[in-house]
Length: 253
Figure 1 (cartoon, rainbow, N blue to C red):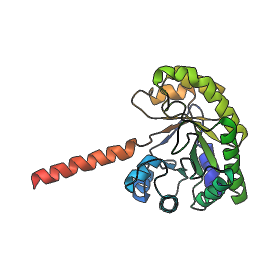
Figure 2 (tube, rainbow, N blue to C red):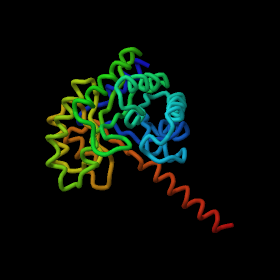
Figure 3 (tube, helix red, strand yellow):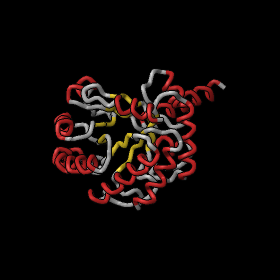
């Protein structure tokens, strides 16, 4: 696992974005790997939907871990799991859960700062303590886990306010980096100027989510982005394809 973790870390190069086409189960993971993926990433929304649950840790933890284990076993490339808020509030409980996740074979996680099931974001200091707990779990397992620190600052604010939130995002990026995070994820942010400011000011490689308003990959590379995530998009595309194919089959019957 250490070699896979190091390989995954080395894929995060500012200016040469790692493209992650997010999956939801072993079959989708294998398909994306066979298409040439350098790494596999799950998306929590997609995994939950595939099992008939809503997002926001409604998917039972044991089921989430079993799926992670099956995804990691299905491919030969590094796997990172969208672990939402870690299914725990207290750092000690979080440390236990992350240890269990590492046991599935995953070498990376996404960990978000929104209050899952509540409102707003965790305070910076409290969230930093949670990142420190994740790093303790990784150190205990002797795995250099890539901890992608997701901030929901931009998802929880209208786009016209995004530029004003960059300084707040940088405060979080620096605190999370000091606590052991490896990357910084800003889903919802599409403004090129704000992305560039974050790339220049963040001590962590920047991850953005593919959305219709996001600049093209070539421009993102020039801005210094290190990682592109497709989030729930692939699952939604697959579901729409399935519905269209089913409608055609029903019509032909």
